[in-house]
Length: 379
Image 1 (cartoon, helix red, strand yellow):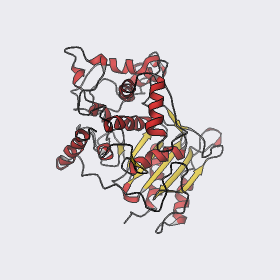
Image 2 (cartoon, helix red, strand yellow):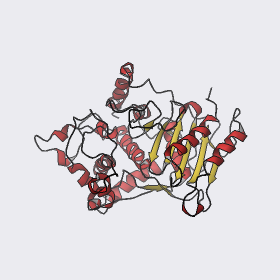
Image 3 (cartoon, rainbow, N blue to C red):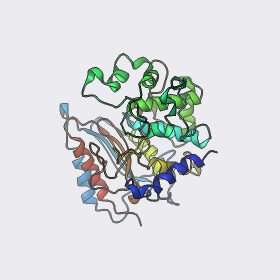
Image 4 (cartoon, one colour):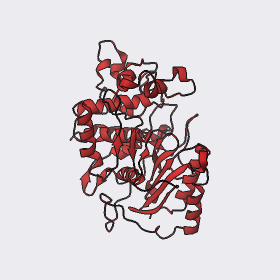
């Protein structure tokens, strides 16, 4: 198993913390010995001692106050896992525990997990140049872009998400326009405008390139990719509601298109809370979650790790997932407030799914911060 490369990357990033990047990630909490893994069903319990139940109920209720058209609550599902058990779970009218919700960019974090599995097996090396066929011609500067830079969104490609100018938007053209039939091919065709590693730019097209790398490595076809995802990730952790979407060319839309239940999104977050382990089996390679929590080293980044958002100090134009929340938190985040928030210091996973018609992003994240604040740090 090729473990040394990405462990070395995590150690390198930690060693540079004194230059203003970030401190070493806090330790991840262990699985309680008396709590079963939620592969078949989630344990259901009450919050552990020290939680003010009245305050928690008020915070949960406030998350459902904002409404959109027709009076439907913007928050459609809200779930809290503490110490391996669901301790709070609420749904808006018309939604249930078995309802599938659109991931939007939470899928980027799922794509990152698939990369981790291939790193675990020695099939990919994040420090090596990304194996993208379109970049291999002699003299093509893109051939130096590493998989690590793709995961950290520092590729330097002209592919930043921008929906303000729809006519020139890469993400709009790729997902909904004339490039939607073969998204990865379009994403890989975009030119280089920054030195790789020097500039952070959030990009759905980048995650399509990564998804295509994974798919070609596991066989290339839609069936091969779906089989790999189910066999290596979804089935082992009990994420059985998950339905990934593929473009017209049969490539996994790893930048934004998975559908799953709130409980299954919680399982995905729980895999990262438990350091990539699941019921005695290593799903993600040792050190991968610390690598996940390593910020991109570009000077215009403060809160983006390897396809996860970190609750650190934002650079200009960025945001914190949990304002006034623990710095230990990190999250898979998607459009309209799809969030899987992982909080190691409180041993929590918080899942919020829905829309943001009436609510602002700051209101959604403040609601989640208020929920987390009701849980004391684990001893």
